[in-house]
Length: 156
Length: 209
Image 1 (cartoon, rainbow over the protein chains, first blue to last red):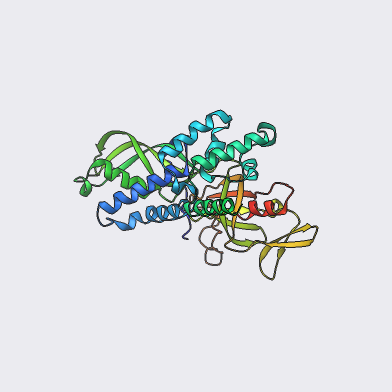
Image 2 (cartoon, rainbow over the protein chains, first blue to last red; image 1 turned 60 degrees about the vertical axis):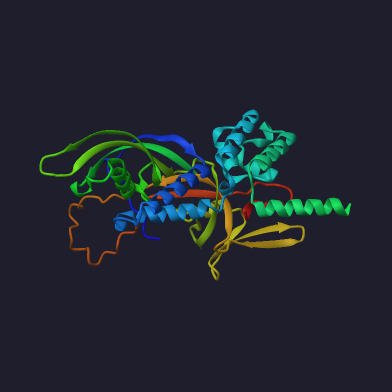
């Protein structure tokens, strides 16, 4: 990849370096809309100047599309945040759960600080249940899982 | 992983673009200036989120272009401390394992953070993690292309803007001098995500996503 360019000149002043945290899903939506807009507005005018934007959009989309956010929608995100209210997690921890969709207790321990002290085993289980039920996962995997379940049940 | 940063800047629109809607020209100019660039102490800029305020546009004597002060919000890649991310191993060297997430490559796991005992295999140029179980020692090779989970531990911003001419050295030594090492403007120092737990298989799940 071409050497990343340097700091942007002093003229650009920063008012608030951390106005808000964005989830992967929001960035995914933004980039998808932007891509659609640019496609609709015709050929890339002055493509020389737009090359950086094209590159970063393409690479970021490629990365984000491999994360669980591609199955999410604004409603699921809202539902998830409402469900998380009872668990007393910090904003950063909720964001990580949203972005990564953990399925094992070990992953929760990674993302939540001092989880052994703050959460009991039942709480971790219920957290996993909430995450698995509200946030959609890979539909193929879920089909496989439910197929295995029904197989198990029928063989009993 | 991503944050919204509020910024202000003056955008110059040349006269031949006056027929376009102002908002569009400004959005394009801002993206041209900031997309895929690292801003010192802020992070890697991705794309424009929205324009919050447009002040009056002025035309200055001697320049036919309009200058507009714009307040806007930009999507910036700036992971917070202790954030967990997933990336791909790009290469290994003596100074550690280099990881990439596609749009950002300057992520490094220093040798001290690699789960000990770890050694660098010179022949294959990979780091190897040797761990012992009841069955014997296993070698976990950190091959290129493997997906790993890591935690952000530190970040470094380097001001790579050009410095002024240095006093005595002038141009005499330029021909023989090596090209100055290009420093990455934004580097992340990370550590692998391993927490001590009982079963081996769970260990592996964490490390290899």
